[in-house]
Image (cartoon, rainbow, N blue to C red; front, side, top):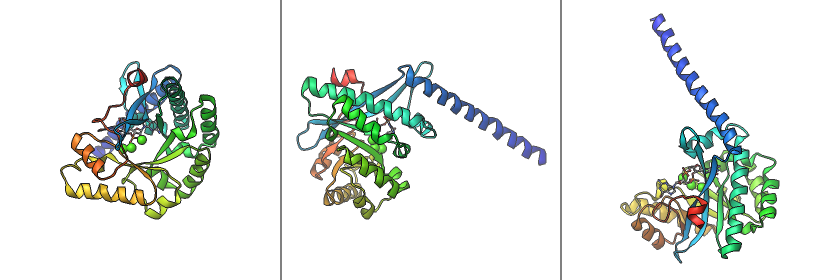
Length: 271
Ligand code: C2E
Ligand code: CA
Ligand code: CA
Ligand code: CA
């Protein structure tokens, strides 16, 4: 029994070491990726449900690894969040997409807004506020054309610390969104205390609303609650025409999802 126990430990040891080596290699690769053009921004349309027009795009980070091909942000963002790497990635995507959007707005006269995701770790970065201010002034993107999205779980991790940073961000004139709403258990009181502009309903609440009265009722109540405290409501993960129609009937303001458009490169999005 003893010998078997040792064997098991050794097995886990080997597996753990392999997993750690893989992560270390990926982190090293990611550091290089920033400087060698492997990272790029995909853009997904956000549509106004009253007019049917595209009013914004969400920037989503993409990594094309020279050997392994496309690596999902669901894999590399959490890895980057374990170190200061996320601040480097965050700055890269903000700079790159703000420049792109500013150019598109002047060239085509588009009233397009930009939505960029912020990681919770970036909220702790003392350089965040100056970096956002700097990006706005160098690109000329009007602050009200930029919405920063922070997930509900990130905001609730340390709500009072987050509130301070959000207030500073908002004083720059940018808009703030609570992302993946419904996955984090925030109270109405906490929501009110954070000065937010937009609430983005998590995809898990949108999937199936067209087939379930209960699911639709939950979304209806989230929309009513958000509107009651003056927030604009966006639904993410809209995959069918029925979902879109129902959201319109429920008074949802904006929508995003594969039914309306997948994330694509700047060239595919803007031509
Ligand atoms: P998110 O912010 O909730 O972004 C929405 C995700 O849902 C994106 O996945 C998008 O491609 C996907 N999506 C959009 N419409 C649909 C749909 O109709 N159906 C389905 N099944 N999925 C849809 P993606 O691009 O893989 O990004 C995953 C997550 O990685 C993002 O979730 C966000 O949390 C994070 N992320 C991506 N880019 C960045 C970034 O630049 N900075 C930070 N901090 N996080 C990022
Ligand atoms: Ca988002
Ligand atoms: Ca989201
Ligand atoms: Ca989500």
